[in-house]
Length: 483
Length: 142
Image (spheres, rainbow over the protein chains, first blue to last red):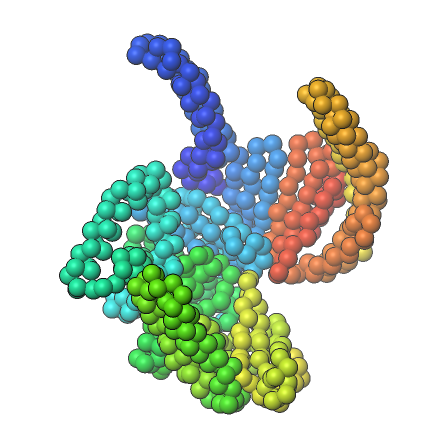
């Protein structure tokens, strides 16, 4: 039987921090009476001290009544002072274990351990613990062991340049904004002052400098938006470098061990037979350089916000094929047996073309009816037009590459989602549902959308557009027959 | 196949808790809202009706319908509901992990619970007596 790390006392105690409202109210009251007299303060502080002691005492009691037991077949967490709660996870059900070592926990030799299975809550871990580092090793020793001696062992350490390239292509302004919001949220009130004064002044100064230096006639609002986009993207890029720095992936007989992170060191232990499918992601830049990023779908890995389920950050096609072979997925990414119909141009390009044509028209209309804002409309229209043009390029490539193949017991599908390209490879046993979707026009011309759902904690729809209905029916028949 | 029924003591405790809660609400309402008689009477009738419905109609019927069957260590079937009877079946080998919750004096109160987490869903097993709770606990741990 093990207790969690004693730091948990503070975490338990923090939940009752609201109780400090009582000494605070009392403090306000005494301030009116006579707050200069130190003796009186000491005399009156007994209640405050008592409340703090109650909070800490409750944290201590919760810690002392929380036990972790590593049994022969299962790990059990027992908690609760009056109401006893016992969570039992068999080792065989564990899909992934993550151990986080943030810099502030390292001096205390504490580790944040998260145990995940294929069941339970989608967004949170099934068991989350703050433990002593030495105790956490007990769990690693108990993880299921495969007795297949044929399985290969290998280790990969991508170079720093690879990590920088990976961070560059997978950074976005949205995730940057999320990081910044999280940072400001953590900083609390001081962030409010920072936003109200320093940041506002700095932004105003930067905007005026940019417009004067380049002699631009762009309105300050558009410059501010541009600067914010670049800044948030840059933040996302920096955070990604810190997150994925020192990435190491090691495959042994039974599991994948992944280590990453510069400030917060993260160790993942993934059970290979719990991997649902492999997703090879690319964007246009990666397509140009013929590189791919190998991701996996596994409960407990890469499920958190702004976290990518990356297994191998950047690979060439040959390296990717070798990696798949080592991961027991074989070299099954071959030619597509079913392809998207080349005539399905409107299915792929319809929406981006609408945006591409619609944005200038809308901008012209706004400028015509509201000439006073015309200066502001042009830069924003250009900003909105760029992603639309980019989307046309992406979807044109998607038209040429969408399709699927079935080889042995594996299904390989290629499609595009927003600005990225996906090549999903899965065992057919992991296929949960396949469906054909047709609108009335597609019904007339004999085309459809083919959707695939694979086994996953949060199932994703893998949509193949512009497939001939005969091909789709043939695929469903093959999948049905061989089930 | 073994059948597990909900604990009768638990039903009586819950009925008592509902009656006490309704009584307290009526007393508080009468004390604080006596200067608005119409609202006070309306709320008192509402609390009385809710308490009566829960204690005399809903809980006994729900407990009567609530039943669990374990079929030869393969699957667990839960039958529950008040007006609409719901039947849930879960394969025991698909259970990923379990959480059990037991309260003080559970031998007398029957306030024992299980949550079974499986692929894509969960099943709650409620109000078992202590013996059944321990027996099932042993079964799920196997």
